[in-house]
Image 1 (spheres, one colour):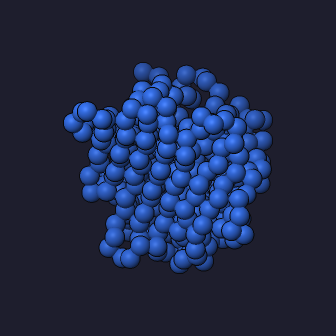
Image 2 (cartoon, helix red, strand yellow):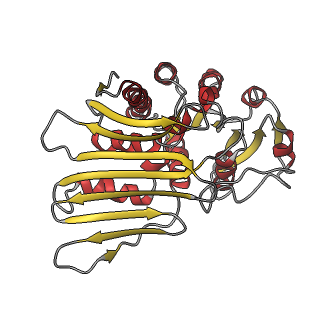
Length: 344
């Protein structure tokens, strides 16, 4: 059997814990180290919770690995092949830079960086590195969104006329999410998923018009955006809304509605996950999706990329960086109540 890739995870919040669960199901990898600045997370006496069923189900109790309070010490472990970065967004840049400098493959949670300027520097590091790096934009791998992208690209139901995305939840709380300087508010931390999918699926918009308001992070915590494509009349009408300002107990939901010439797709994930197709003259159809969440498919894709010897897809990485440029344009649009061109 070939040698397993050795993984170190930095950050044991909900996403770090979710990644830990997923690696345990992949034969080609072995987690040998974890790092978190909170001692109770390292020893298993406390545990982060996810907002979607299936997140952060396991834990570190009974896990025989090296444990570090400082993620930089993990990066300096010469036995590690992959560094999985699940720390606060404001720390992504420094850990990515350090890991690539130590010739580690890097999986970094979304968004790629706190600012577009930092994201562009990460692209430069990636271009000069022989190691692989992936930005964990999970919707690109989420079965319902994979289905939608293929439907648009293949004109399965004819021309796509309109797309609307929505992502809503209560405020997650905690020091990180309460500081816009660290998390970027719901605008960057939550809404980024849908903005990235628009970019991934349709390409970079020419401009945006956004409205929104500040919330408990101190930044924009509720946003509604229209993405403007001027290059062709064939571009659909595209909008999205994201918020974590709902009252306590609201829970979490994400959805999309995609209207085509010959069909309408309606997706909803709340307590259950459903994708329905509506067509004139037909009964509504429930579409069976591939089982699993985007997190596991993205990690599997990254591991396969490394094992196959393929270089990182820098186009996808660059797209993740440009998504942050779109987000920053949305922020300006909210502040100025104007249409803002994308400069990326």
